[in-house]
Image (tube, one colour):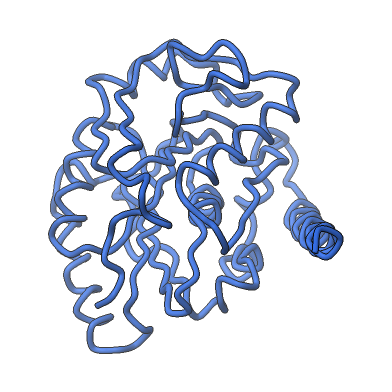
Length: 278
């Protein structure tokens, strides 16, 4: 059984590496844009090749349902949430009120594409355009109709469709409200970021990193979180991703800011305590 798992892991890693190399070399970088991400010059169809096979076809992912009113090359917060109706909308508004920079959000829904509930959801999402704290929001919709979920895949998609060269991967639930002026504090980080940075005041080693600690990194950083559709949870998937980053860099930098992340709010569920059945 272990040999079979190792064999499948090798196949998956090889496929992921091929897809990443395709993204890097599929376009020719214009002169003078050496610091820009190759994904900036890719069409949406090319970006959708990043979808994992077990997450379904590109028909189940709708990028840019909402676009920001203006583009800013700051730090884009990359996060994901489930569609829980007004509850998820209120959590998003509350979270965004503490983050003044751009946001790339993947919203996961159980509605089927082109169904009546899907159309109703799209109409509800359009109402978010008028909220002042969401002027920098890019919202992407993922239809989880195959009952398989991958928190890492959702974060990867949010990062892939971000509009700035530097991103903050925020793996926690939107119920974890940010501290005041976090974005202004992070603006002191060299931009664009050159390597991943942990946002925490307590981490001292790879074995003492608090659960669901956000990370700042370049959008075109060569390592992406490993995506899986079994035994998936926000906490375990993110632990694996941070460990990958730590090994890649032989240690990570750190931004000393305290965040009140509360993983116990959703530690018991496979993905999070959200009702995906609609």
